[in-house]
Image (cartoon, rainbow, N blue to C red; front, side, top):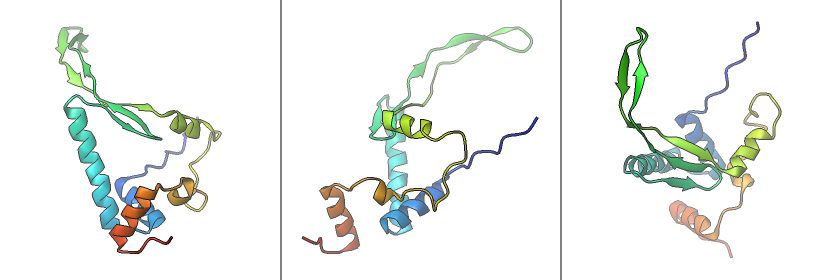
Amino acid sequence: MPTAKPATLLGHTEIVAHLAQSFELPRSAVRDVLDGLTETLSYTLAHGGRARIAGLGIFEAPVRPARQGRGLDGQPYTVPARRRVTLRPDRSLSRAVAEPAVGAAPSRDEATPMHEARALTPGQIEALADYRGQEIPS
């Protein structure tokens, strides 16, 4: 029986490098933003909140109630209540994942750069220009 090739894992470093290149920003700035996003999500979910990121989905951490379980020896035990992080994917993410047939993820050469995939809002353009210390063309 042939084994499937493992999927590519896109890690923190790769995401930072890709975004820094796509938006022509320093890696340190992108890393700070990504770390801030992680901290904000963690804090919000830990305190019972929900977070929605357009194009990605809704993050939640509902409490799973305590329940009875059985060990390997058949003896019952109590599984404690806990929070579990869930992501309800946005419709656009679900469609993007469902579109390609079975196959590998596109290479970096084939992938659409982030800045070409969507248009920036005027506020985002101003923020980038302020960060870079540039004038905004009229």
